[in-house]
Length: 282
Ligand code: BTN
Image 1 (spheres, rainbow, N blue to C red):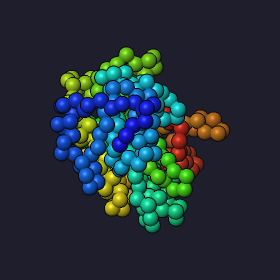
Image 2 (image 1 turned 90 degrees about the vertical axis):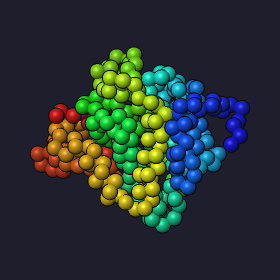
Image 3 (image 1 turned 120 degrees about the horizontal axis):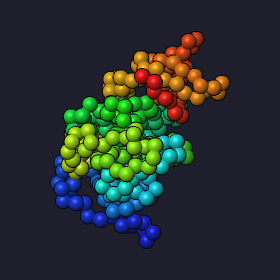
Image 4 (image 1 turned 90 degrees about the horizontal axis):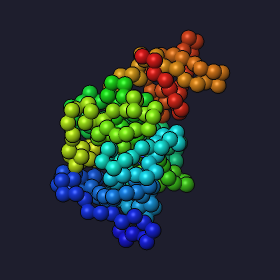
């Protein structure tokens, strides 16, 4: 793929990473990975590549991001070496029963991609580190009550979904986080007491995303939902509060629905939270 003049130039994939990636397949072929020293956001670069026809599974990795972003318009602090910053181009199949099915299943299918990504990445980090990684709604990876990784899925397409960008940031080692973040974040190095091989971690992540992507295409939505909930014990029986229209509301979690909404039992009804911030009280 030829890069435009204003496009950041990829650098060679470091040998250790290239070696770990060698056996990884995505769909029918080898996973295509482009490695950058510095980008604004790997999601931006992946989206530009997708606009130019980059195939399903094309992955952008960067040593640092100057404008990494998270959910709810927040910044994702991305200093060099402290995290694995990566974005994968996912191309849903077009046609009946696919995730771009014009029969109105787009929204739940899009949520399923995000849920499948959470499962894939949680399993990959677990496999690589043996840490008791859990998912916390909407799709954070946590160890205990500290966040280890975040996932940002962004969709593009005017009539149906052309492509999705699955961006993930995994904290590898402690960083000088901005105030307010330090006590809520953790890293693989802090939890394990040693560093992890980033090439192996990336390879596990891509292989796992590819496998769960295949499960999604094979129509295994129930399996994805079940696995997500088993990796997210706090999605059942945890006390939460959130800002509702009438003020602060609270209740106890009762799982998620197919659209990825969090179900919460309050005194008098079952609420469905689809976005925004939830405060976990237990
Ligand atoms: C969140 O928890 O708020 C989601 C964070 C997602 C961060 C990753 S880092 C790689 C990719 N590029 C970005 O700009 N964001 C995602």
